[in-house]
Image (cartoon, rainbow, N blue to C red; front, side, top):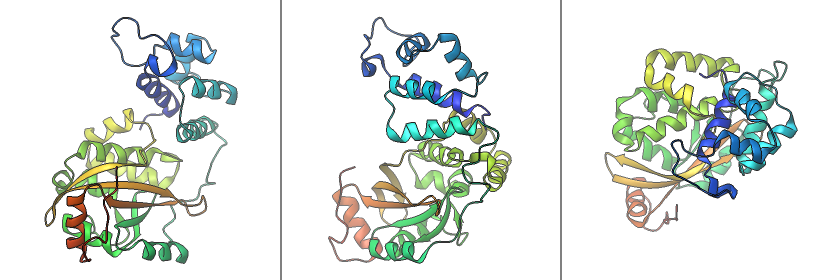
Length: 285
């Protein structure tokens, strides 16, 4: 895992931001993607030398004002700004956003009731270890055939995606899934949580370079919605729109909900889950 998460996040956001997005002329063809350091420094009102120190991890205690200026310059979304603030606070050795609390594995009755209301849609409650804590019947019928639930409850989505060969067959876009798993493990307290750190150490050994490379290069900010493909052994190719619903800070959990992204997937899910046609309607990704 990179020991300079703040610098990594700033650099990746700068490289992902085009001049046109922030009102700058594109100019001649560029050798490197995104904004140049000098351009971002000018927009944020800081020196190029200071921006270099931040990106390289030689200065890990930027002020709130500096982080706010950089966030404004890069036109960060609200989610990205919250993540940036957490990284800035985490650079303070005395800061612990969760007071040392480990991942929560207890699902409240109210959350269980919400899952029941979400039937027949596939939905699952997970924590920051990517553990599968509770789910709808629809989720179990969708995921059992690919082997995700073989380990029982709580299962480990991270271990399945990164270590089970069946995951590479089930997910045609496996590279993206693996990136997302690593980003999820790195978000929030990351390695400072002993249980997350232990899982990271385990995967470092069991997976090797494919995992360590991602830990060094991927910021801890997973996408929270989108459309993914699942090659299902019984239902064929499915296109699933997914949404992440974060629960309260006390829960420290989230619900992943999957819906068909097209009519063919909707019909296949109705058959797979055992519902009458039209139970799950296709939604736009």
